[in-house]
Image 1 (cartoon, rainbow, N blue to C red):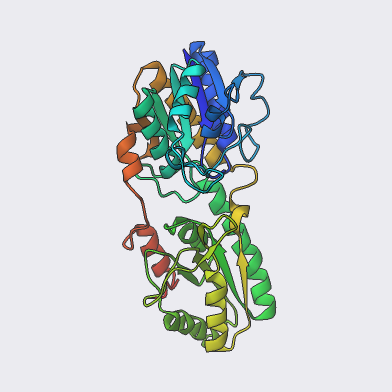
Image 2 (image 1 turned 90 degrees about the vertical axis):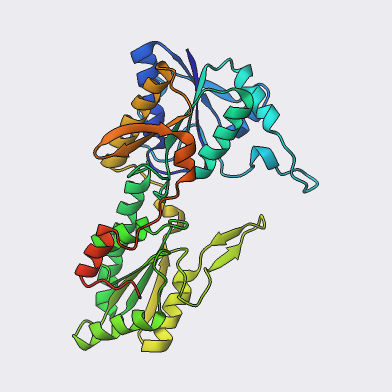
Length: 356
């Protein structure tokens, strides 16, 4: 068989580990050909298609590397592709043709909910045989406990909290750390607990700034003149809106809520406050061991699904084992933090405030 492989959407740590696992399992386990497609579906638009054959030799030494050797993109929906005159055009037929031009028998797509949903739509239109592998630092894809990239992002955010702890204590400051996660608070929740934060603000639990300040004042009264606040980028106050900005392409992006909260704390408490925005730092760097292991397990299982001709499936991690399920179900199931999640209960048990 001839398998295509692409990484789509935002990058994260562990993508190269997936590429390596897919290649080794396909070539050594089944004798399949593997073709890596460059820059996700953009590679399928080019003529000739932008692809390279992957072999065990070509994936040597990439296990520990961040990013993706194939490149990726999170712009240019094939069904509404940007054009020079500003009017979106449908270029899905060109992408569908690219798959067939490569002579592929199947495609393994690595992406988040948006990327996988687009790939599935293309597969249905073009008769592709598709298997998905979930990757997202947000960890918001349904039916999998973990996605590739999440564990590394949490470790990076936790290290940031650890470092800010020292400065906060040295200067008697309130340090606010803004982390990514889009509409889900998984990174903030995990890193906040692991780093010993005093306040964790997540989108799933609207916050009251007065209660956040009350927590900081209570620490002051007990002799603790510094505090650590971990904020997910899309949190909102009980009576407020999410904080966004418009980028150079005219797209609305989350960002800036950390500054808003730090300024509000300073006004209400008089505390010297500082904000740190991690941003894309959470996406880069060498993947931690758990992401490498997860990537290996997902890559092997995805190739096994191809060999079994079980398509329109996505792999996942449940109850300490790899599973697979219908791709449509996974794409449709958004996984936010449950306000009654055991980790939320754990945080509250440790005295961490959620501002509610």
